[in-house]
Length: 129
Image 1 (spheres, one colour):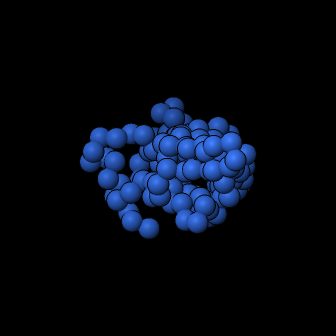
Image 2 (tube, rainbow, N blue to C red):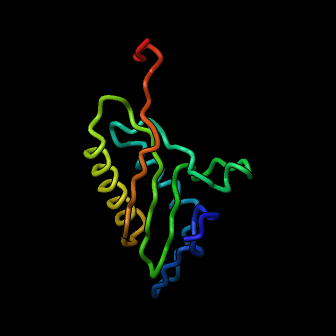
């Protein structure tokens, strides 16, 4: 995967006898990002290591890298979790939720959904002195 691209692949198109449906890549990024943030225990998305969007001052797609190969959507998610959660359980919940969203909302097949836990959020009052 090219590390300089947040989303690889062209516009997503589906053709049928009634016409075609085109989905902008940013829509897929937003679906994946909002689905991830909706999972209990996920605090926020993280910046991707070495991501070009930081240099270009783009925040759309923050924490999400998507690669589409042969109509299969592969996802890398960079997240920050809340404290006192089971990291493994949250990771599995995010994978299931994102897979379901890709299948139901876009009608595409989800491939690899890689979870990268970049940090744990500790509120100021929960920090140990």
